[in-house]
Length: 193
Image 1 (cartoon, rainbow, N blue to C red):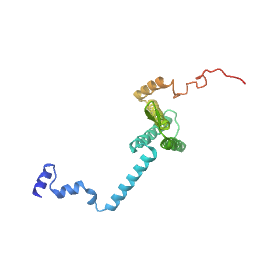
Image 2: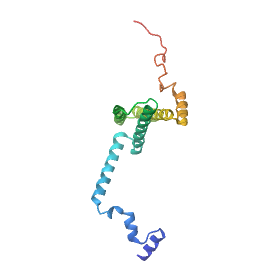
Image 3: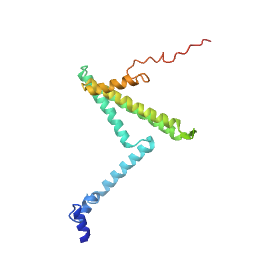
Image 4: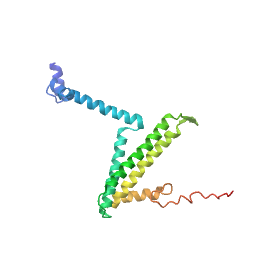
């Protein structure tokens, strides 16, 4: 025991008891049942999120942060620039947006999990799995653009510049600012019967 205490003192512990109480605090809190209950609950929630959505909890934390940040900066722009007061309907819009995004992602993930992979030029491809990730990236991309636009409207010049560059670069494929003319995108002659 003296040798073990000597080694632990080299790591900054007083003795083996000090090592135990700092390393395994859950046993010394006095309420082990609460600690185990919280650990099991959080682990179960994490496992449910990962298996039902295909994405880790870190993605969902960033996703929720982006939605809240976009909503909060949008509210500030609305109050500061336009002089509007806080409206509870804006919060409902944010909740509906989260619900729609999550429903789309969950539906696509469920479909991609039940679709069999197809072999194409020696590669295994799941078309719905591919679509799932494309839609996920598009949703996150849209949230980032909206957040940058809001920051730009609040006076952050860097954010306005980044949003402008992205919009100019990708607006030819996507309609971020409402200027893309979708009707004239395909110029095929109409055949009358």
